[in-house]
Every structure is written in structure tokens, then in C-alpha cells.
Length: 270
Picture (cartoon, rainbow, N blue to C red):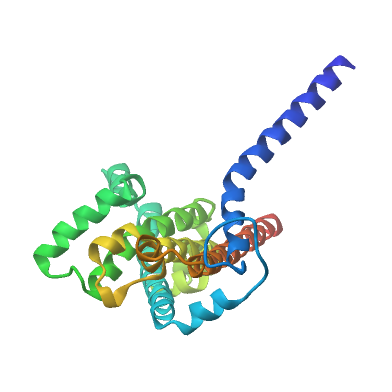
């Protein structure tokens, strides 16, 4: 009986600690959302009333709509390229055995370890020598470098459970490497590839530090515009932009959770 009470007390303590951690992480985010519909020109509580004027101002102001469009185009483009590169790198690392494999993997994942500001300064210095600073190709390359490690990790995790005998069987039946990949490997690792794309998209869409060092004024993204507005003119439009970014993040998290469950069902059925 005493053991049962101790286990129950421990379980309640664990739930309480989890709730406190979640509150610490989520409450600051949720606190911004009501400010986007607050009928006040200041980011303050208590709320004075409900209004949608800040969203109307957001979508009617060319600065914000251009920044949103830049973020969307840059995030989709960089995520697509990063997913292709990350998938190819994951395939090479999973299917080949060579010396220095661990060192190469560490180098490919280094953008996840190096502080973003150090990464941004290094890219600015290097791109400045080759004329890529303040250009869209340079900004795109920087975002690809940030997103590719996520694709490498997710696709690598999918390949960890891949049965290589299926690939050898396809090649034994006469399929070329390209056909074997398209008909055998890709359908099985598709959830990992899509998850890598979503992670790379989220990384690019939220990035601000690298944009400060590399982006030209005409390439301002939504986070960069929010950062500038916080310095120049604090307005509830910033809260509306933050709410939209939070909604995008929520959709991405929901999609990744759906992919996780789908992958689990596929694994169980197999």
C-alpha cells in the first residue's frame, strides 16, 4: 500500500513538473496572441476591446505583405533544395561504408551546433569575397545550409529501419539505381523526407540572424521586418505578424505529428 502511494505521489509530481515546464514555454507565446486583437495602439494589458484592425493593417501594408511573400518564397525554395541535398547525403552515409564517415557526418551537422550568429558572420565574410552578400542566391544558399542538416537527420532516421535486402532484390530484378530508389526506397522513406522538408521550411521561415548579415533591403523577410519594427516603431501589427507565424508553426507541428503516427502505423503493419 505504501509502495502504491509512493508511486502515485511520484506520478503526480512528474505531471506537475511537466505542466510547469509547458507553462514556462507556452505562456509567453500565448500571451502575444490576444494583443493582436486588442483595441489599443500599445502592446499592454489589460485588453481594451476586440478589433481586427491590426490584421487589416498587416495585409494592406506593402512592407508586411512583401516580407511575408519573401519569407514564403525563400522558405519553400530553400526547404526543397535542402531536402534534396539532405536526402542524398543521408543515402550516401547509410548505404556506403568508408573511412572518416563519422567526421563527415559531424561536418554536415555542424550548422546545428555552431551558434547562428557565428554562422552568419562567417557566411557574410565568405560571401563578401565572392559577391553573394545582399543577393538572393547568397541568402538562399545560407538558408539551404541551415535546413539541410534537419533533412539529413530525419531521412537518416528513416533509413535506419530500411531493409537493404529490398534494394538488392530490386537491383537483382534488373532495376537501375534510379528506378530502385524511386520505386522501392523513396516510398518507404517518404515520411522522413517530408518531415525534413517541414523542419527546413520552419528553420528558414523563422530565421532572422543570418538575414541581418546577408539579406538586401528588398529581400526582407517577415522575422527581419518584425525585428526592425521593434526597434523603430512598436505597433500591435507586430503581434498580428507573430500570431501568423505561430499559426504556421502549429500547422507544421500538426503535420509532423500526423507523419509520425502514419510512420508508426506503417511500421506496425509491415
